[in-house]
Length: 261
Image (cartoon, rainbow, N blue to C red; front, side):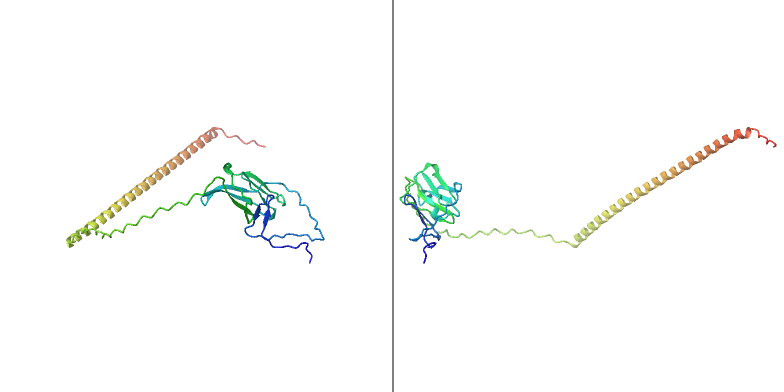
């Protein structure tokens, strides 16, 4: 069987230049091409890409009583064997120059702290995110605090019977006598009658006011009609006098005789 293009399933461990490695927590399968002893495989050069810094976060947290620098670097779609994880005591260095996505991260730790870096620092790479926990130099794990002894619970006090409030006697309602009831009925009826009479009186006043207004309007209309009739009669008399005055000069002139032809 030809060895060219043969692939195997491996746990991804990327060696550093100084021997460090990055381990994949979910054991991502990676295809690794091998060369045969008699034939060589031609390699293709990847196109040059712009070098950028990947998204990252560095936070100081206390883990198991000791402070650590928690590292989180986002490297989506970058194979683990192209990641170089090379932390130092003062700076975090992560590069992917062997991949088409060329990332370079070289930043100091927060607050200028120094971390403890062993011979083979390890990190986890899961779902495209590189995570690591670096212990801070000079930090000593605090011993767990002793929990204070719980005080013995005092025996529960004997239940005290609740004191029932004394019943307050309500005063009895007075007995209604027949005569009193009749008086109440008469008073109610009298009040209703008075209310009806007041309403009728108000209605009568309104009706009287309306009739008075109607009479005043009729009187005004009658005066207006009389004034119009008098004005018309006077106007006719003036016209008649003018016509009579115009006819008088014409009657005084002698009549002309007709000439015989």
